[in-house]
Length: 292
Figure 1 (cartoon, rainbow, N blue to C red):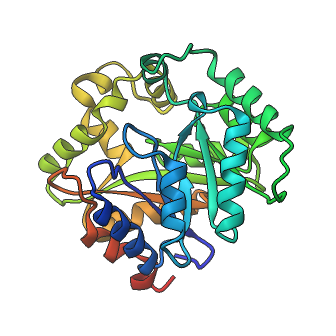
Figure 2 (cartoon, rainbow, N blue to C red):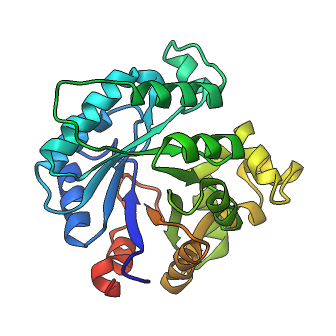
């Protein structure tokens, strides 16, 4: 990989204890990864967690990946991001998204049109005036459909795509333009056995396969009907989930960059689907080991 290719890491750390969580961040920092993305799920707040880790790491960027805009107003997001950016000397990336209707309604929020919601939110962020230092914040939004990518192109610094086939990268780049960053989130599993690898993949992403907005996106790449049954057909799994040998996974990552991704964010799924990332995979793919 070329030196300008950025390689990040994302993993659900909800089941990691405090010491394990800290070691996870410090180890990815030591391995030379460019960024560590903290999801907002059901345990740790991504902004509080980022502050804790930024104070205890050396060079890796910390990113919210993805913070739910329903959970906080635009002023709160700007304030948190600017604070983290200022106090870390520029090592924070603000990742934002709308999440989905089911999760937001479960939290008591009223769901609205995602394109309009995100556009309004980002516009209101631009109007926020704070008395704190006017540090620049890098805003990346979760987007894969053309309308959401258009919002990212107009109002953000980049976009994060998730569970999309490699062919989607070229389309997203056209929609974003050359000046914006394009981050592809890629599930990776070091397992050369097709049956066990696909079984693990289905456990990892089966929830998403049932979501209608992902199905609509995949339909534009020829998937339909039975491809969405039983947590995904073999063809769908193979298109959106990188499994196999180290060389095969690395080739998938390279293809993302060749298709004009700015950053590939590895999601290191372990064969046992446990609460720990696959360190063998992360160590093998690390910029230190590959010389990038």
